[in-house]
Image 1 (cartoon, one colour):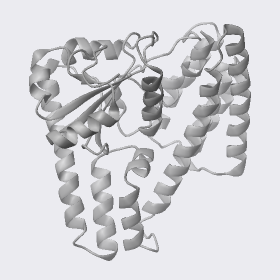
Image 2 (image 1 turned 45 degrees about the vertical axis):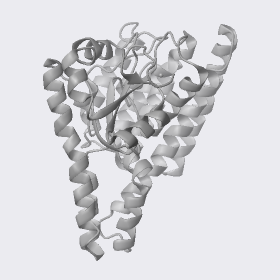
Image 3 (image 1 turned 60 degrees about the vertical axis):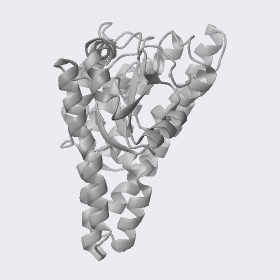
Image 4 (image 1 turned 45 degrees about the horizontal axis):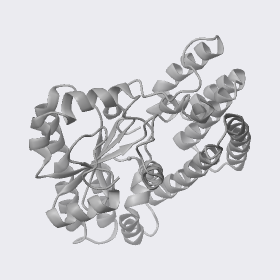
Length: 346
């Protein structure tokens, strides 16, 4: 379908009603984020958020079948987590409009780029760890979650210790606490702005360069949200023909926005690399594969030593295959080739 075109290379490039409701996650999973936070606070638990495509994402279905549906997982998490399913199914007829809106907002806020993505958050909704599919069954997965949950305890202890210090020492201690969680920069900027302000106050000359890094991360998150907004408008059309026209218009507006961003020199290094990959994705969705391949080459040159650069040759092969009539097919959402936990830190 035309409305799915924005996902053609989303996984490669980047990359659901009230409590007790049961869809893919089954019994015990909530679909109301705000209610889940209140429950977690009252029961002194954390949040486990499953960002999933329950009826199309192979790794999501595998994770549900092998782990989430099993009694050892339910028993191992019931006293520690409130389970929240944030679903993006192809058949969304069981989701209310309110839930669809909530899920889209959460996906953007948490900078989700592939499915399944499992976010662990404190009761206030602040993330402290991210993972995805893991082999080994429910018992091993629960042990994995326990290891990740220790990051929240370490975070809180590190923050408390940092608050006892002053000047650059405090700044470095806070930075170390944030880095230990291994969260995306955009996520840190979104959820830990108060901590970044403390770092800035303790190191007004920004000798560590961390504040500059975070400010650029926030700027990139704003860019990404605006870019996604072009395509979200295109999904509001009712007929297939209107949707096609809307998406064509959205891609035209999006490419102009990306080109302006590149011309402004707003980003450097890996963030510029990501903008160029977005450019490649838009061109690919428009069938302009030569332009897409050129943008892919430019993206590699922008930050050849980044972690993301190591995967760019694979992206290029997908584009070349699509250009020659093979590879990814337009019109359907593509899940990530690797489980989300293997993409941590991208």
